[in-house]
Picture 1 (cartoon, one colour):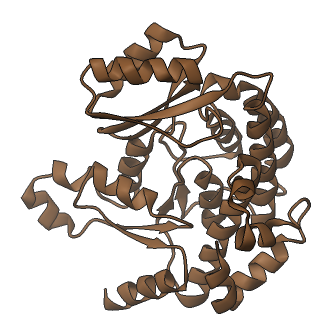
Picture 2 (picture 1 turned 90 degrees about the vertical axis):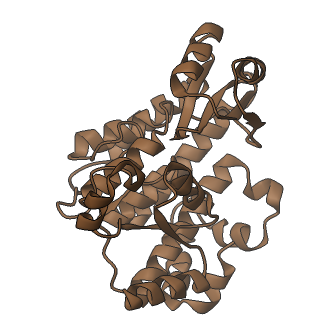
Picture 3 (picture 1 turned 180 degrees about the vertical axis):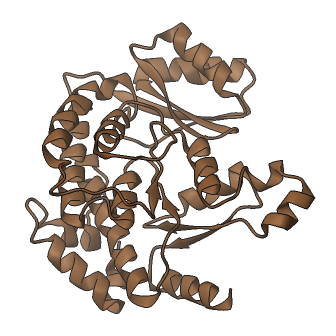
Length: 322
């Protein structure tokens, strides 16, 4: 993970070489390049690893293009990279925050705490699923991700999530898929991690280390609204540990910040012609999950995934053509 960027982008390589000098990050380069997978995918390792690779991509894009984002957002962990892209805080601050975020979330998912699980439910609305969660118990379950109208993730104790799976199918869900995760992210089981992150964020998010850009806005997962000051930055990054990722609403808010009032398919042809093409979303970091989620919200949305040098080139070519 990230080796192609490291070997072919001087800016990305220089960034990763700097990251391993940060406190607690000396193992990240070796872990990303060599694994092993079972160690890399543990949440206390994968959170700083994915963030490091995402920020390598950001450096490679900045090296090759003069693209400036209109607005940024990240899905869960990705919100930290989004803040770096917008200039809210430095890469070093981000890496320190995600290091502890991963550590405390991993800690909250270990015994004697109950084992956690997550299930993706397709074809059942948020209202119906919230009703199921309330019936089983909001002390052990939560809606974790509202990715699109057709895909919602439920998170909680393993027994409760298995109950959701069977109940959702009975209620008419098209499909339920248990996720390969090591904990119940964005659920009440993460309350201990949230409390610890609250203290760290109060210590780190200061005027000396943080600033809110006037030109590049960040949309927060927890509120699907713009982060407008340091208090809301601390609050939204704290809340996102246990609150749902409101991704469909975040995408709609990003469109609004780019001057597009709604999902393209919800607008009349006349309005679409007046507005022109909707903005292009650039997904940075490993994988193409967000590109898929964008299309599940509206197939008229266009996204480019950048996770390696080929992706950087494709983005550069697209910008030059347009």
